[in-house]
Image (cartoon, rainbow, N blue to C red; front, side, top):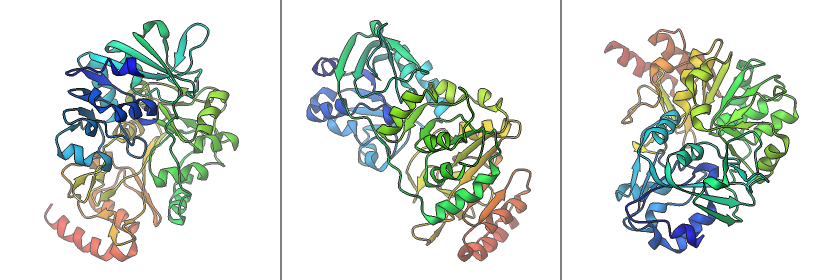
Length: 411
């Protein structure tokens, strides 16, 4: 690892894998020798709930450009060491493809095969794109990284440096869903037709949906992420046979990662492929399933702001939602509990008051809470408001009706 650290030079821009592709051993080495980051600009897609290192805090003049906020990064963001670029996943992929060449790109790969090819393993999202855009390249060969047969690979001869290590992989745990989340999943599952191509995003409500889909048949995974639930669907016979499943990363336990390597169930691809709107829109019954922090009576969705402060980012939701709306028979679903903070706050609000809107009202389709389903596509503004109020928590419905009357009088 020391030879790699010697390549960290002031003034250079260096790509590091994020999400479940993060190299824990490298992060720990930088933590132990933070001077290596002096004057360095890191570029990485760090995700809340997966990545737990604040690289910019390791040196006073280190800088990080990333794409989603998380509480871990708040202090460094306020200190000016972190830059957040407000892009969807397809936008991030184009940024990596089109931006100025990187000085250095780090790839996290499996042990190479006899021909010298190594797999990007469980995280093919941005690293293959960054690898092609770098002046210098380092391959970190991790004996724990599974080799995914259907996924991008690199030839070891392309690397300027090869570093062998044994580093734990980033694992993503999942708590058992609450009764509320199970209810949401049970309401949403019948809306997904057999044979649909499905994208299931991050969040408690979408996470609960996996187990509610076990009686479906011929589902095809077309998602940015393959979570633990994909194995359950495969074992229950809910997934289509063949090779029609694709994702960018796996996010679960080591057991899931090994299972995906052994079964060859899913093709892994970079984000230019997994989030390609035209490709997804061409899939019949493409169904995008995501969560949200709140939604207003116009159908506008907040994915990013909590208490007026940036909490996350839009991620891939805009890409998947718009593709689903263009797909023949497709649909875009937002699954979320109706309240937050122990039931004291409604997630369905009269009007969003955050600085920006993550999904506009033109992208509104289906919203599911524990109180029911609101189908917004094809509805007037008044009909949308009525449908959303009907699935709000009953303690807030009258207030929402009064708020809507006042709002609609000003339109």
